[in-house]
Length: 394
Image 1 (cartoon, rainbow, N blue to C red):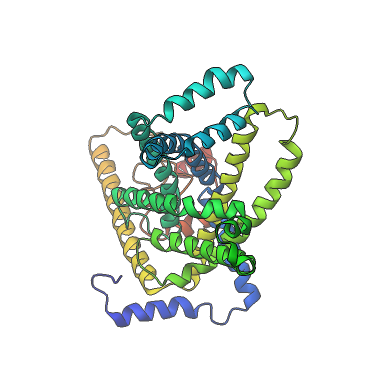
Image 2 (tube, rainbow, N blue to C red):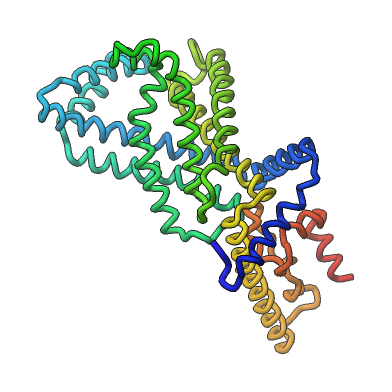
């Protein structure tokens, strides 16, 4: 993407200046700068909190999704003449017996499954509607956060962001319906389906699964950025996310083995807690990978993202200038009306009356003048509110 009044020569020159700054920096120093920028982004954009939000909405989407699928299986069994739903019912009842008493299984779980699996359209429609809303809400966390990490907030509207999140969730459901069972079951499940390919499957199974996971994560990062940059530039974040996910899942398994298995204070909530923790670890890994890609793009920006950030910076500067003019006009009106009290704060001072938000510096333009508000906040030490008023009175 190119700015409206920007020639290709100026755009290329700006990109060259952005990259030449780091040309003579050592690799060790560069790695430290990237690590520092990534950690700062994770802290600044509340990655742990956003990962928890995504995990909650993902877990919220699972029960209605499963209910909708069970209701749909009732129709499929009637059409195909099979008894798939019977084996699924038995497996669900066996699993529910681990957390419910015999009376609870017979009076709650069994009648509920019987009603759901009769092929009820209301269960299917309501279940899928709730699942699509909550699941797309979880994906929206990733899309919105990745956009903000790149400094491109406002480049894509709210409606387009939610539609993109909805489409990504539907695609993820279709891919996950095939990929997740294979990943959980391992190569033995593939060998059962294709018996003649035993050696080939054992040799290629995990490399193919790893490659497909990298492709999926890279595509997620690629389409979440509002402008089109080269697809391969998002591979480093996917590698970091996949590595963190494997390591986090391994550590989480050790933790759950010692805290949840057997007698535990969680009781019947042990399984949902374990699933929620695993989804949270996965979401955290995805967001950290996005922070890595954003840090790399700030060091070696692509033409599209550099031009888009320049456009967004101009819009923020214009918004900050407009805010400054409006506040100055209000201060002038108040002084002409002679309604100002001596101890009242001076409304002409930008950024002193209202506290800036604690997150997303892209939204600070309305609190600070149009210069680089982010660097200004980093340079100014935090002062108590009474100290600020004392400084203004002096």
